[in-house]
Length: 309
Ligand code: CDV
Image (cartoon, rainbow, N blue to C red; front, side):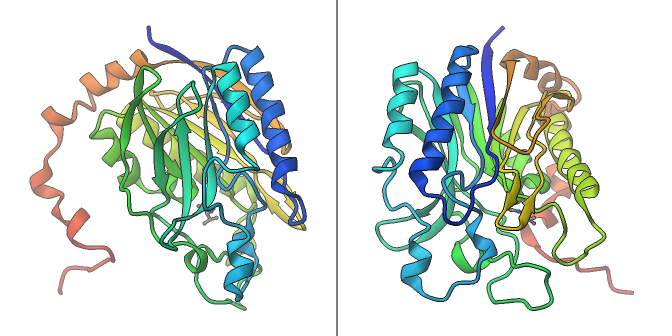
């Protein structure tokens, strides 16, 4: 057995006025709890340091940049890195990244147990729109504030296993898991901020949203025989409700741990990375069973093109 004890550290709402220092203090409290419960790794949500700012329409580049981090760790997050190193616990969390040459990404990182960053992922499937959309009940401006990630879907040898990351909307796309699955991924870590109502369809509420969320995670885990750790930012952020639904999914596609609240909450599960072997060596033994000669459309075409009549 190669057991990695994982803490999925859900964050409750972060209001627009809340500073990074306050949020980092909440993250450290969850980290302390996780260490006391024997965690090797703690996973936090997407854009963990701030409110989900892409709901706000902004035009001033200087104002937009206040939501971004140009160095990591920085003054606000150093206490988190320091505590993780003291405790000997690896961490993963999401933040808005501004690169030295001015690019903007929705990013997540993985550290080792000494607090060194060993993996970085930049969100590839950016949902939403880039201009103000008056038809929506609320805005989702990720395409305005971020560029699509430029690092692919890497998998890292870390923490005794093969670790991968994706972010929020990426989890709805089978390609996300399969590209990591083809690198042997044993654990996919992801954070999310999902509003509990569809901004373009008011009758799609929290029940449907949680269903689609779990459906995607469970399928991705099963079809690639990997653990999936999915961590929410939840609750009411300045009148905008985010669904919870933090879960740990095993390589059979079963939910083995789940949060009960919409606040800061830790769930812990001992994840045996060797439990990924059976699926990878039998029904999802890719080398034996995949038929890539029939998959060309997946990478040669984006939209739907029905056959001619
Ligand atoms: N932060 C996200 O990527 N949110 C998206 C939108 C579409 C709700 C999601 O897939 O959950």
